[in-house]
Amino acid sequence: MKLIITGATGMVGEGVLIEALKSPQVDKVLVISRKKIGMVHEKLEQLLLSDFFEIGSQLNGLSGYDACCFCLGVSSVGMKEADYRRLTYDLTLNFAQAILPNNPKMTFMYISGSATDSTEKGKMMWARVKGKTENDLMQLGFKDCYCFRPGYLQPTPGQKNKLFFYKWIGWMYPLFETIARKYVSRLSELGVAMLYVAEHGYNRKVIEVNDIHLINEKLKNEK
Image (cartoon, rainbow, N blue to C red; front, top):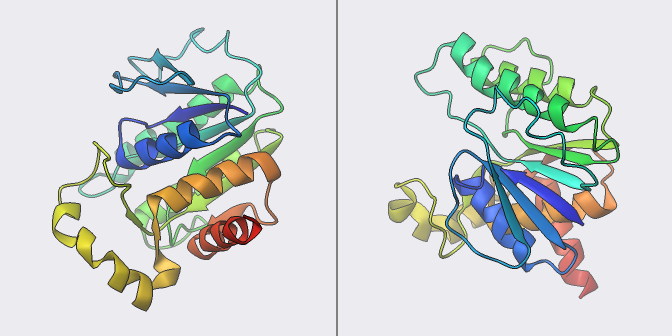
């Protein structure tokens, strides 16, 4: 597969990138980001965009990609709805619409979040915005589109990009996994699930934490 990843300078994107570079199913990974990721690999290429709202012709030459893992996102904490919508809905749709014309056979995979509101009418602002983003992405016309809704994610050992509080609570992950498995997964499991779905598809367009576990268990059983 030829794969595009956004958000690789953040925790989720970096975790997905690590799995993509390890995978024998992936021949090439193009990271599109605002700043250099500081990583070198024979499969890896990088395209720097200073502004994801001013893509212009910078993506015109990108064609023949099999899948995109869109892992770029922001926290809604302390943000007004208009600002959050611009950096979530507008930014994501802008990118997807720019890359679609030259990649109509692409599978587009969007990192959403657990408890996203598909009705777009709930009380939680971030959940409504994420829900509209999911809904409209699925209508754009990609060969396939899947929305992943992870909950708590345990970073991959050695990751550079992770939130500071993982230093204090990361050791508790085995407990989280025991008492709240349907809400938690390892970031490596999310990456593996995204690569599997990119290659094989899935029977649901919205992929929850339980689906991430099921995909990983299936792959382990096939080994």
